[in-house]
Length: 277
Image 1 (cartoon, rainbow, N blue to C red):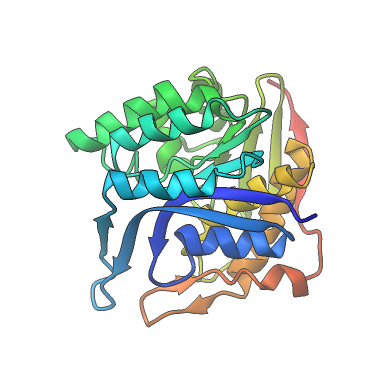
Image 2: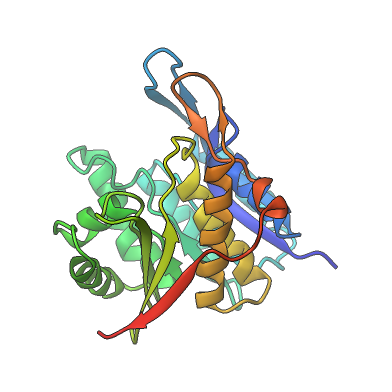
């Protein structure tokens, strides 16, 4: 029987990020995706500015009740949450689920910590969700804010990963993206015992919107398919590399990843090394 997997995140009108990215990713890994929508995100095509409509908490609660009614979901991914109170609601509903694996993508919660609402959201996420998390998946900017330090080298990524790991998750993977120097896109996984550095060639394309959502969704999907954490991160990186490489332009300003690329691509291309602590 096909396995079920839940995403709790925002809806992206462009179709390449958020809930849409998660569900497309789940389908590519032969899973039945279930969703709870926390907000609706749109993009102004003339300015590329994002606008979020927050779904009322009672509506989110009703969705979550429906999504979890089968009581047999073993993997959940969270993305854009928006409201601090939503974290209370999520924890109340998932902490009693047996053998749960939780993938936390700290998207939006750390985009603007100068905002009082966002600071409150981040604080609750760290205090309540991180201790339940199998893995958290910050990009470099999010990792810098979570660790309260600048990251420009692999050594600084390692330091930040240790700090974030101490906040409670079983593991953390920092997405290096293209910001670090060199010809490779590097991601660093830390499970509390060892560091694993993943390598792939950098791509000179701009169809990367939705890459972060798709990466965390692919990790969740591979965990649901009983892969170990290292394999899950490696396959997720291969999946996103293919999706960026064959991405789609929604308009002249916004390029999205294409989730169908992985099934047509040559597998491999991502290597990893276990590096000293």
